[in-house]
Length: 410
Length: 88
Image (cartoon, rainbow over all chains, first blue to last red; front, side, top):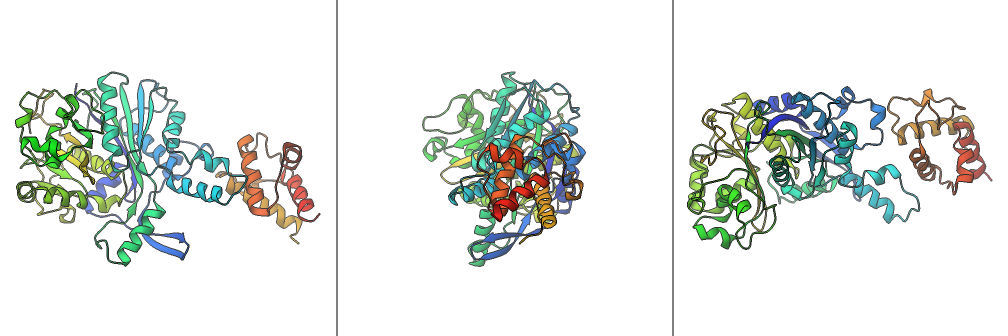
């Protein structure tokens, strides 16, 4: 079974809808706004890439949204856009559609406001604020608005929430629990994150090239129906911890090795591997996995933030040489800002590159020497955290070179 | 002392803003309109929200349903209740 992306719905600092993301991708930038945050030391102006959800009025009457906060509204708008893009009409029976919402911070702003009230020892608190202060509020409201009767899940694994959600979605589809999955990553502008970033930059602790704090959502319609897949196949998805000693067995660096061995991890978790959702692989691979080299070679596009790229580049000289000289490495962070579910936007950008057959991008988006993008290239969206935690989602283009056969080795 | 007309206007703005009545302007609310009727579509959660907002804005606590039910009938009844509690 091949699983792929049938629709994309995005909202962020670059605008609303995938045409806006495509424009930003071609331009190589998005317009940064300034946001005022209240601190103990007075108001502070911080750069931000914020999302506008006013287009939600095109889908539902505003009065029905009055109890939904900004976080939930972003998720709802992303969901409607993805459904529309996948040509799933509103009101269609959605009892066979699963919903997964990945978030790094959840409705943090509301939760913090709510905690302020509680710590102020107020006997009464806002019921609306309370109901929006839980992380699964967005997923629940999506189900309510869509009248969906399928499984509903909120995934909260900070920066690995998105690859973890993709793993689960693929399992649902493979197990035929659902026919389609509406999967999205959502994060709201974090006042705490912006405050921290502001102070780091003031004290020179972070580079000036760091993208501003962002917010928004990227939603996808995942399906196994080949007629509906338009943005590429999902070859692999993984989120978990790969201890160095486990991966060094094959003589390769643990972080990069994980990229080509993820299916093996699902199939036969090595001892010491924890995290992630070890289960049956998406794609049965041949028995030569222990010898399978790290194939991030000439024909793979790596999409990640600069921090992750530096980790991969520093991982080993061999990888560094390969990555810097032959691979295409792209960071689109400047289009949507810094946020825990950034990988969802990377996957949306990768889907657009695949669907539109984009060959050239602005030089500013490349993490090393810019060059043409191969139309047949797989795209690996990667996030590496501390302690060998990594997550990735790897997309294959809709190309005759990649038919629906088993064991495709790139 | 806050004038009654001013108090009513403040209440209307508070209702619209705190309950996110995006398609209703404060001017659309008449003094004697029934708040929890068909016109505005408010429900019991809105009643609790209003109790919270009244405490936040005016420092007046509505302690139970016996107080709340008559006070929350309309903007006029709410203004009268607040006047009484703020100027005993």
